[in-house]
Image (cartoon, rainbow, N blue to C red; front, side):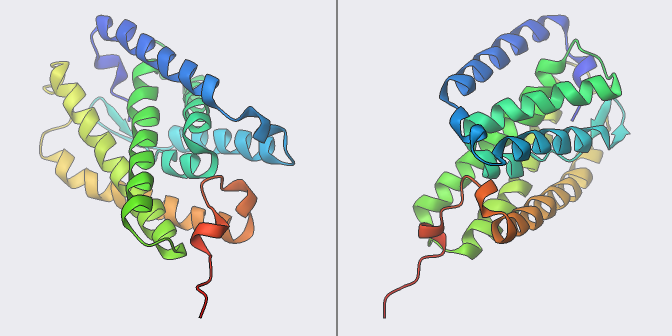
Length: 221
């Protein structure tokens, strides 16, 4: 989501401070040793490039440019700290590729990167605490539904930000949001659920949040 150029100038400074704090925390907490193991660094930077490509493909409604996020998939592959760093890198790469403007990169990362990653983290924690530990729960609830919910929250946050910035008059008509949100959420959910299933089956070492002992454990007779 990219309503960035319609935000007041004062918001940019606040957004950069918030993003800087988030990235600093993520860098301090990230397990950088993981990226030195095997092909993990290739998977990480491949994910950065993949998300950046997703962000360059989209369509616009008024001042807002919609695109798939890739945040839930990134989070499930690398966990919270590395996902925050990776989404920030992907946003920078997408901005370089599309030249959508640097003034509001921080808002773009916060709304379409940090926020959906945090939503995905909350969904996973809630599912692990309240639902049975099995493969279906991980793929369908955490991957599929988590991705859809992350997109819905992001769309709502973009709409609220435009309204608070008094840009709604030049942005999408209010009737567009309810129609677009389910479509975007379903697309994001399908992307996340499908790819995380493939990775768990064929490249489980890439999926840092998938625990074989938890989700594939066999009950004793």
